[in-house]
Length: 547
Image (cartoon, rainbow, N blue to C red; front, side, top):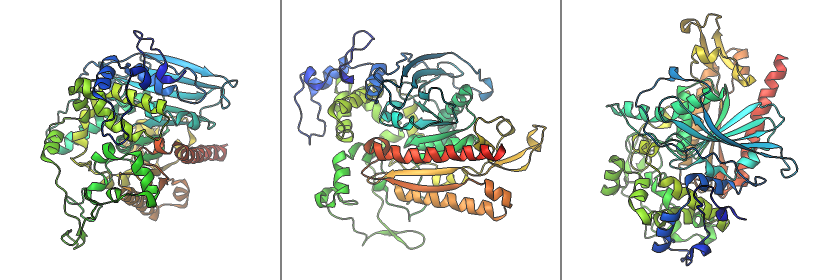
């Protein structure tokens, strides 16, 4: 029985396939392929977020019955809180399913769905984890999804990544997104820098609190798109806890070429509208030039004509750049008014699923029909929920998806931060935690007597070969990181050079767009496996050196 045919345990809801709904297939070229009547039926009869997540997870190989904890929270949160108010061991809602070696050739494994309660009122993170039973957990991988999405989008990655010995896999719905609690999003700062910092902290403070509750000292962090942006922000604010940082098509790296550095790529390369406009057909055509139409030619306008640089502006160095494309006034107004795309889905009521189908039909057209439908239902179920974390977008990104505080300015500091005494003196579960550049360590934990600094961490930037996100920005970031490593090693001792682990590289995933983990899951999983094995072996090497 397919996932979309499973019956919900909540009120007898059922996710029906298209033929059961009585829908007439729409032409493949229709911008909104779901009809009006079918959309209305989906709106009123759609599955809950819990069941929608369950249906997607049902496609994980060897997992016949995914775990399903049904806790869902959406009450407002108190606006102020302190990280010192943590109460380790707060209650959780949890369900675990075990797969034995009889039905799981890579098992036995334990698959868990957990709602982890955080401090403060009505704050919780939805967590999905996979543990290899009977093995020591040497390393932890934490996965963060993109804007407005959820951990269910990684369903093609969990099984492959959890085959690797010594690793435990965690995926989290970021606060205010997915099935995590949805507290009211409020910004109290008055200045722009303060607003940006507060918006970032809203997510990364929750991640740090989760880490403390889970008693994880060191981990590898994978973030996709907005999750990648937040992963960098986390690494900068909470140093000393990452073994490796993997950024899958991260948003927010390059600067606005017209506001700061005109030599950067023109805005149409990284505009957020491409996330809703790019289809699998675009990806296929881009990888098969003979089939590419003039309309899909990079940097062409709606008439298929190439942008001319004859009348281009020039930057301060005299280099020609394409004229700034004006954002539609309605889009700029909606952005500044913090009207999210999901607000439109909610406001449209019964037409919501039809609008969502304009995106899901294009992004998931390469998947088997039942999987594509399960992801569509999952997307609708999440987009319908109370608005919360989605409202951070306008504080993080300007219209056009350029960051208000570009990561290219800050990423060079990742892996080079001073570590607070409470972090540097704690016992690590991973030997890589001790791979630190230490000029002086004192038994006395007083901050003024402890000068421990990170000695760099490997940073991997992944992009799809047909990614609308700016690959050039990623390459510039990798160059900046490697320059920071070279600078740090100039005055380093031989021992410090041996300990230094700072390096950065860019990987291109073939035949993939922005959703690299889904568009080309097999290659993505292969690249991830190589990075995870490398991290594990580095940990083992350090252990042997101390034996």
